[in-house]
Image (cartoon, rainbow, N blue to C red; front, side, top):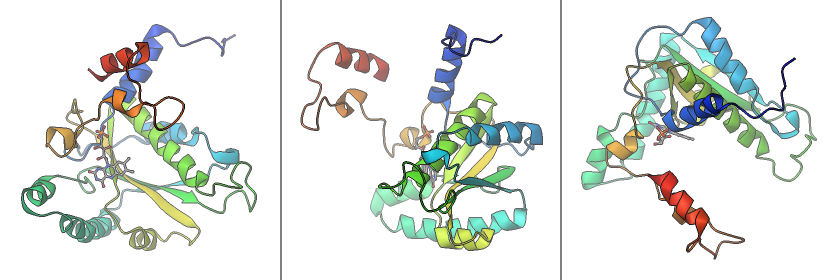
Amino acid sequence: MTDHNRPFSEAEAEGLYRAIYERRDVRSQFLPEPIPDEVLARLLNAAHHAPSVGFMQPWDFVVIDSVEVRQQVLSIFERENQRAADNYSGERQQNYRSLKLQGILESPINLCITCDRSRGGTHVLGRNTIVETDLFSTCLAVQNLWLAARAEGIGVGWVSIIDQQQLADTLGLPEHVYPLAYLCLGYVSEFLDQPELQTKGWRSRLPLGDLVRRNGWDTRLEDGELLRCLSKENL
Ligand SMILES: Cc1cc2c(cc1C)N(C[C@H](O)[C@H](O)[C@H](O)COP(=O)(O)O)c1[nH]c(=O)[nH]c(=O)c1N2
């Protein structure tokens, strides 16, 4: 009988950490080959095993392989991306415009992970005070899928430069269903070592030691073992 309480073997733990560290947001490296349904089903099942407030499971998965629908979503992206570029000027704007921020048509499958805000009725256990916990839960489903996809050699790119209402209309979502994540999925030519925004000089990973505080906001880690270990992790 399997002992479900045993810790992961070293190789299993390493696999999990690999998925975490080598997961990338993918926009430019998609290959057109299709994702077999069997593999897609595994990814959706990984998402479906995410934690959720009151076991609400507020997600649905809208699988989009129609080129026509994807073209409509791309148009929504293009309008919003133009507006986003207007937030910058000069060199920063040029850099922004040079970034590839979606792979809607290049990836074989787009997936909208939605959050049904009414699932489970009016009183969901744990959602009495913080009503956004249904959205948080759905984000965890996205992350489960993202990590499982990495382990399967499949890239995922999250496209959020999109007007949510226009997206909801395009997909015919009911009013109580929120389009939380629009994702592009496909096999890739490579997974980059670093976030693309970092290699393109947009923004770098922050030093972890600067982000850890103790017992309250005002106390940073000045020295000690934890800070030394965190600095090592950062390398
Ligand atoms: C909620 C949310 C929304 C977006 C993203 C992520 C998340 C979590 N990211 C991807 C983001 O840029 C990326 O995760 C970071 O740059 C870090 O890179 P890696 O994911 O580690 O490769 C993203 N990327 C992109 O090209 N277009 C987009 O619209 C978005 N939107």
